[in-house]
Length: 328
Image 1 (cartoon, rainbow, N blue to C red):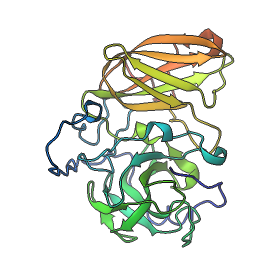
Image 2: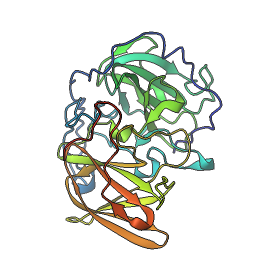
Image 3: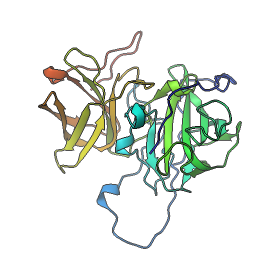
Image 4: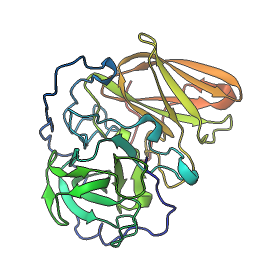
């Protein structure tokens, strides 16, 4: 899959400074980019069935920010690969700066929200045209809205074809290109990132906290630490449904250019989880720890793990000013 390069150069910051935009205004809900095809009838795999997405923007608390629709339409697999989540450590100890969505070559790639194209072509990582750029053919969109005073960007990498040009304005759901396997990859997929502020490689956030979930489903953000309260790197976390027994897993973030949300202060995220009761399971220093956990739909649900102390009742710390934790 994606093999991010060792950082050599920050993207051209002129891209982010061309226009001063109003921020802190969530986008106007746009049409759900549904695209239906009609293959030969056959039984659909149960594991692939998902309800329709919540409308964007979607935020039931002041601290959630599901502002982006899926960049792959609803008739395709449009959720992140479990083994290629944000913050995962892959080849050559490189930390993943986005999520990978499996997509066969030629799958339409859609704008996740309204905005202006500020990069289209080779060279996104290096900041200048170079066909050896690890992102391959890529698009960077500066969106028409921001978050907490900062501009928001999304990245679409490893494309086979680009349908937009720099300076073009796009709406949510507009086709901007076709998926492919250009750049540093081991197979076809879409690499998707969310960036804040300057919009460069070093300003990413976890896309699973920004992509709107399916209706009735939720997201889990965990703070996974050792006994002394230091973030654990590469710690496996498993969620197991109490009703179905199905499991989901993620590793806590590795060391590198990845960032926690300022409120949730997480170091692992699993999105697209059906609401209900779960077990959160962690093996730490050869001892198994289990937490009974309720996932509420349409929300970011949180837990905290502190090494030998196990799971503890700690909520994300309030930020300065009027920023306070949401009500249960």
